[in-house]
Image (tube, rainbow, N blue to C red):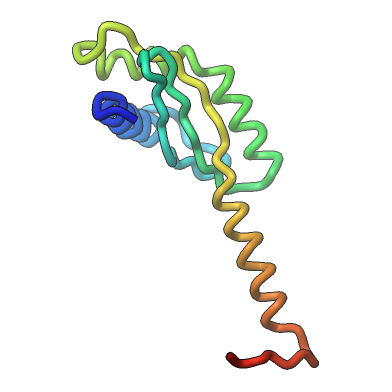
Length: 122
């Protein structure tokens, strides 16, 4: 990642977080922007979001984000239009790291709490 794309990614993450926090109605699962990756030509911004809620709520919110991409891009444009000639297209993806980490923790707890098995010390 070049310095320029890194700065653009950081700015987009900050502004999108602010938009989700202040300008869009809150309902359903908790949404956090984990990362924004911008293509080298700055034409596409891939936005990775972490959602905490039920599977159904998360699915509905991702669908809503896909449907409202143009509106979110318009809000973003109103904030950063003086810094860019062209606002990148937005693509939203669900970041599943939280779910994977929680599953690993469950497996570790399960493995450590098995009755009748002795643990060997090294």
